[in-house]
Structure formats: C-alpha cells, structure tokens
Amino acid sequence: MPRTRHHRGACSPGCAVEATLRLIDGKWKGVILYHLMEGTLRFNEIRRRLTNVTQRMLTNQLREMEADGLIARKVYAEVPPKVEYSLTARGRSLEPVIHALKVWGDRHVELHDDAAPTVRSAA
Amino acid sequence: MPRTRHHRGACSPGCAVEATLRLIDGKWKGVILYHLMEGTLRFNEIRRRLTNVTQRMLTNQLREMEADGLIARKVYAEVPPKVEYSLTARGRSLEPVIHALKVWGDRHVELHDDAAPTVRSAA
DNA sequence: CGGGATCCTTCTTGATACTG
DNA sequence: CAGTATCAAGAAGGATCCCG
Figure 1: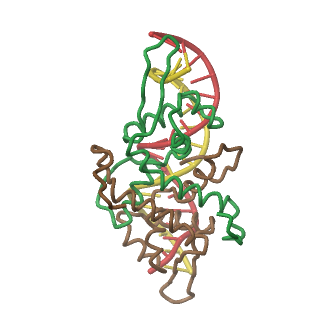
Figure 2: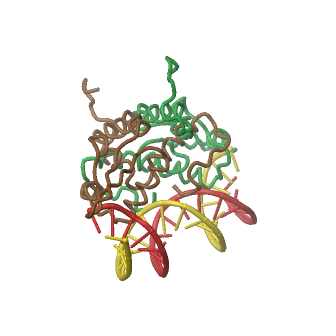
Figure 3: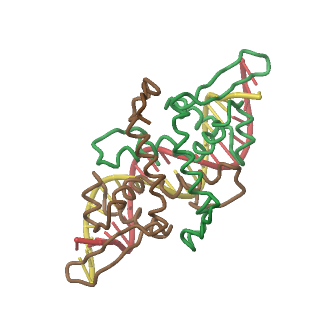
C-alpha cells in the first residue's frame, strides 16, 4: 500500500483498522511476524522460512517493522556476522491479530466458491 | 501490495496469514468492510464515510472485494441510479479479523513510544 | 552471514473529465 | 447517482553486484 505509511490524518471510525493494517501490510510482514511468534530467529532462518524472498526485501521488511517498534534486532559482533530478530512487547501484542488472520485464512483459503462452509460447531 | 493478487504458490505455514491479509489489504478495504459490518450502504454513503476517497478508488476497491466474494452489489434499475453494497456470508465471516485489527489499532494508535500502555480494564 | 547500493519494472493511487 | 476512461506520479517489489 503506497502512501507515506503512517500518514495519520482525519479518519473515520474505521481508521484504527487501517492503521493496524498498514503495520502488518507489506508482502512479508505478516508471515515474518507469524514465524517470530515462535521465537527469535536469525536473518537466514527467517529467510529460509519464506519462499523466494530476496535479501533486499527481507531486510526492508525487517527494517520497517523495527522502525514500527514491532521487532527487535540484535547484532552480535562475531566473525561470521550474526543477527537475531525477535518480537518486542508491541510486536507480541499483535498475536491475536495475526492469529485471527491465520484462522480465517485456514478456513477460507482462496476457495470463495462456497462462501462459508458448513461450519459445524467448529468455531 | 502489488503482485497479481491471489498468486497462490507454495507458501510456508504463515501463508494463510498472507492470504487473508491480501484480501483486506488495499487502502480502503479494511474501512469499507468495517462500515459494511453495520449494514447495507449505497455507493455515496460509503463514500461519505471515507474521507478523501475518489470514485475511482472506491469503485476499484468495491469491485475487487466483490470479485473476492466479500461483498455483494445490488443495482436498482431506477431513474436516479441506486446501488447498494452489503457483506456476503464470506464477508461477514471476516468480522473477528476486522475486529481484532480495530481493537489493536485503538490501543496502539501510532504511538509506539510507550509500547503497551497501562491498559486498565478499558478494553 | 547479513546486509548496502543501484537500476528497473510493475502496481497502486490520485486527479480529472465525461456519461447513462 | 454511480460509475468509466485517461493520464501521470510514486511507491513497492525484484534482480544484481559489492562489502565487512
């Protein structure tokens, strides 16, 4: 979603929705958050978990999320560089959101041909 | 988020997250869904609820959401054109997601300077 | 290993003007 | 009222190559 990120203007009620959306938007942010929920990961570990991510994109997304205070970046001054990424408190607070996104996705995966399956008791 | 929308490729576990994200992504989709949750709305009614939306954009977003099976478009063959938009079952199923996004946004509005306020009981 | 710096292409959005 | 059509700008994402 182009536009300056965090524009912050006069928004109607649903503004909060957009604001949140913009933080987790970005081609890989959602997945990255998802994986970091399980724990700290190194750059290449994250990379391996995302199919076809270029270093540039991964770095970008991580940087933006860092700027948004969602993740923390820890650099180890070792010979083979080592950088670990983890969620900040703010980032962890997004768990219910990510969870909601995943739950919905799991039950409506692309197939919007039946629009709302039987949905027995499976809440 | 560019890329063909619904690319559907080999995704890692967090794929579902991305898939859902891509449906509600788009500058206005989140807010539109949010407003439609309250009931059917006409084109200009939606437009008035979103600040600074151009017809083009609104039409675009609505069309995409319609294609994604999230909203229904009902055209009345009247003299002054009348078109109503409402959520489909699939669209309504997104409520928990939109809700989660809104709740988070309400409590973390841009100010990621204190990362998780006191949060008394004030939900 | 974990990037930084460039260059390029595509998608998205905005601004306008016109129409049934 | 509810769009459609065009034009143009800008941002997001991709491909490459270089570096400590």
